[in-house]
Image (cartoon, rainbow, N blue to C red; front, side, top):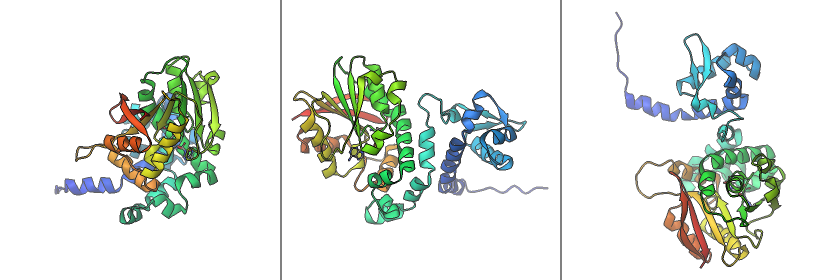
Length: 341
Ligand SMILES: C[S@@+](CC[C@H](N)C(=O)[O-])C[C@H]1O[C@@H](n2cnc3c(N)ncnc32)[C@H](O)[C@@H]1O
């Protein structure tokens, strides 16, 4: 006879939350090994996959069955593993693949920064600087492999979630667009592809521009885009109609955010505009994953944060800009427009 005992569902829930870093790490390892790519041709055994990706068969099987428990793969009764729609997002050849994000969030430098969260919460300071001894954008040029991880993650996240909102804005043929801090160009490539006749400048730090790859060639817009290296605290390329700021202002405190916006105002044509894309924070207790993005900003930056619409409008005004509307929005991201005040 077997005695049935109950368990406290709340304790099980809390245990799951406490251990959720294991899921991130497991997803990242599957991404790094390229398991989803190997499953693209159909279900396979762990042994077969282990040979293909260069892993220990027994250990890989344990990874795959744990990931099947959260829907990333599917473990069949015969012990064969099959792809799932969720896991397909880890394929490197998938449109808007999320593989780059999985690689960043499981990487040692990113994980290490999060170990400093308590320092951030006690002091309000950057966990990243506390752990790594440098601010994020000072550290990355000295650690190019980690820089590539951030750039790959931004292609994934921005390409998936914010580029469609920017591409949905109105751009006239002949319009000149500067993507300020554009990273590897996921947003600018989407805008140029959606709006024939527009022209773009990808502007970022020298190390980022040097490794920015062939995003524009793959989007078929290479002939309408050039790349410029520089520092947006000094200046940005002048004379354009539109200055795109995607996931930029949330990296900085108010004073430095105003400096970046002022660089755009100083550079743009008199009738030009700024298009700022960010995940807006709503005050109050309603559930929102923006609250987690805000915590990421607390960890990674010194003074960066997600902001409410009125906080962005206040920054525009401080920089001599006038908020003029919301040309596009998605469930999380908003594109806010501002012009000369
Ligand atoms: C969070 S990423 C956003 C990238 C891109 N806009 C996107 O949405 O995917 C921030 C970008 O700002 C760039 N950046 C940081 N400091 C900069 C500076 N002083 N001048 C120019 N770009 C800078 C970084 O190199 C990085 O590409």
